[in-house]
Image 1 (cartoon, rainbow, N blue to C red):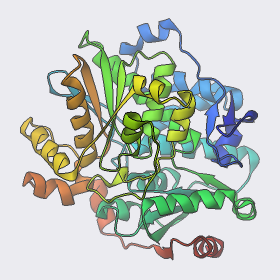
Image 2 (cartoon, one colour):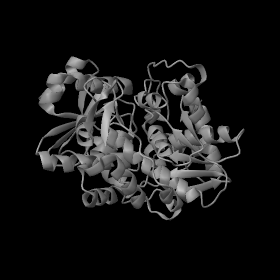
Image 3 (tube, rainbow, N blue to C red):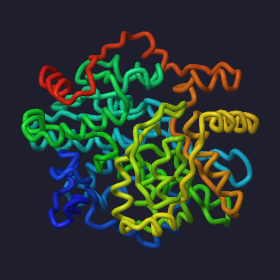
Length: 431
């Protein structure tokens, strides 16, 4: 399978090169030259397949012969070593819990897959690389955990000062070894801009061997399609209604992965892109205008993105057509007060969500008001990671998992840096 840039489809690279580079030289994003379609036999057996079996069948179509099937199977099974259950919340409403991995966030799947792919290719090429990633929260902790101790890989994480939760910060600033954290005086969009500018800085990129671990890296994106297949296979056993997915969306990597699954043949009826007040894509779907703007801080901070990178991929796949986009995706946006209301509504149903899952629930319920469908909203992080919001909103005390207690005892180590590129560049050079 070859990959091309959204800015130049005529130039193709291998899966390995796409993973190692992260971003094409022309500042586009990599896409597979085709999205493979799975056979009918796969979908007939889907309800009986494990997440690991699904992951291997999907991954091998995108990786091709660049990782031998035996090695790829081992890799995928190691990545998917935890559960991703669907939980019934109420009639026709289900939560897909993606927070049962080591850092209690959905990004564990993509980060672990990318780390293992990069480690495999590094062993073959014997090269050093620097993984550079901007995070609005959970990407940082997932990437840090996935790459911790990987030979030949230095990880540099950029996060906006004062705009991530205590747990998220501790998970990426206390590991040491090959993990470095930069606390940027700015927003997530500033962090993302610094990363993109660094990749376009050819001298710096060559010197450090830069690659990205955000969802702009195709190896982060592909594995996130796995759990759509699994969740659909589990729910189709319980309903005859069309199935929709409501996806809490910030940088739109998770929804892009779901669209990949749909194009591979998974009969997802529709997607709901559920956002907070950073409503760039819902605004586009309603008006046809894509207008990036500075992000606004909210209680669902992982979605505080004012210029979602993966919109480029989705828009390319949907022929740059707002009409085609709207046929596949409905966009909704909610305030913090509405999000807190959803947290309370879910808690009354005996389900404790995090703010991002609550936004997903709101989007699903709104869509179901005029559509008779069964729906799954993605619960992307353990509620404890947002205890500062969840506990006072619900007037409860959450139990802290042992894995997080260990992080809280460690000392934060982060390098302060301005959002000016030359300051950031020098900081990178000095690491």
